[in-house]
Length: 293
Image (cartoon, rainbow, N blue to C red; front, side):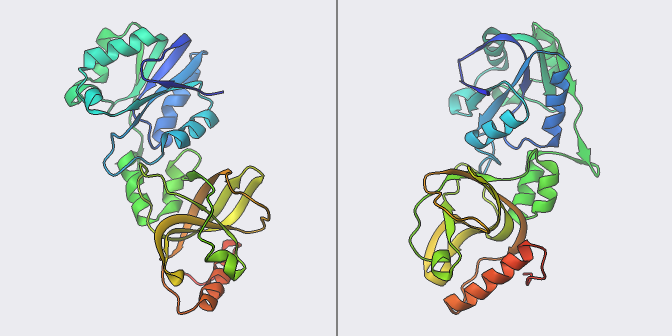
């Protein structure tokens, strides 16, 4: 069970602490998790929200799911507030050292912390009460594997490349809401709706093929990110048709995994034309020759 700690809460057992923002949890971050395994004790990490322009790749609740799947024992969650932004490096380091029974600290070679990003791995090595292990940056094709690269792929809808980098793949998590009663159900394609989290970096709007994880299992899905102009609905939502599912998911927590960008959001001349397109999308979802955008 992952223990979720707010700032100021500690972890009293011998542990290894991974330092970073960990908002994207890509394969470079996973190398830090693997480095922690050799210490043979509990492992956890710091996790920051609000420190990335335009939003984070994953929200705190989404990250908790990822961290748990990676086998981590705890997460120390930090809001990147004005107060935190102006915390001197030595004060933040003292805070961590007083809250955790550290056997080791692990960070990437580009890790920076404290006011004006003045804290460095070299500084940590000087003041830490335990070994500090610095992991070299991971590169792909000569390019640093970084959250900024993940965001470029999200903005372009390039889910194939994005999912190669992310631990467990890209997803959006939310609670199923009651819709407006228009759209998929009217066409014989009943859908589920969730709100795209406000603090999450926006995905390219459009229609995707993917899967949806529900309490009763995972289903192939056609996912719409954005408005539904054919029905005059301009509100931006995440709407998914789960192929093969029947039942009621209202109030359930689901995770939507877009895996391939199909086409942009568009207004069809009629509901019938949209129905035909949805049928082609479903065929493509199952490996057929559905029409590509």
